[in-house]
Length: 164
Ligand code: HEC
Image (cartoon, rainbow, N blue to C red):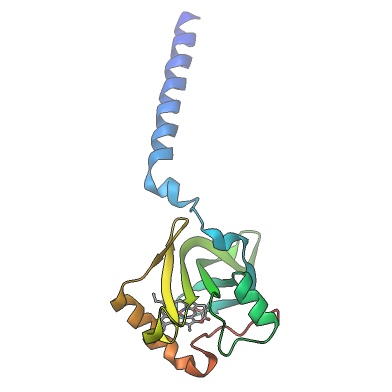
């Protein structure tokens, strides 16, 4: 009897230690990423990048949504912010032909301010680190901008608003 109670207590303590250790690992933290204010923004579009095996939700702040619904997106107005949230793709566990978001990968941003960012088409390029929006370095922004010049005629934005 005494032996059993003691073993039980020891086992309990061991399990507690193990579960605490697990909770502290970065992998466990990555399972629940911290998101920025874009979580409350509305949808502009979605995309599936087949060359990157990722799914993306493209969302906008109020200014961006208002502009998209009013058809005033060439150019997009100053103050518009577009967020792109990226997940790795995976088959739905209960319906494999449905491809759904898996692990969170990144959240990037384009911020329209024609006075602040004249060298990159009036757009600032950034990304969210946890819940903080951080602007990219000049070099990194130049890379973003270079690829986005493919859609210069659409004010450097690829997304065609899907809920106008
Ligand atoms: C090699 C080309 C390429 C580069 C480099 C690139 N993008 Fe894009 N970006 C795209 C394409 C294509 C889309 C539309 C499809 C999608 O959702 O990925 C897009 C979409 C976006 C969107 C949603 C608005 C829109 O234009 O549709 C944001 C925000 C964005 N990118 C931010 C960035 C940032 C920040 C960087 C630099 C760190 C960057 N991009 C670099 C190709 C690129």
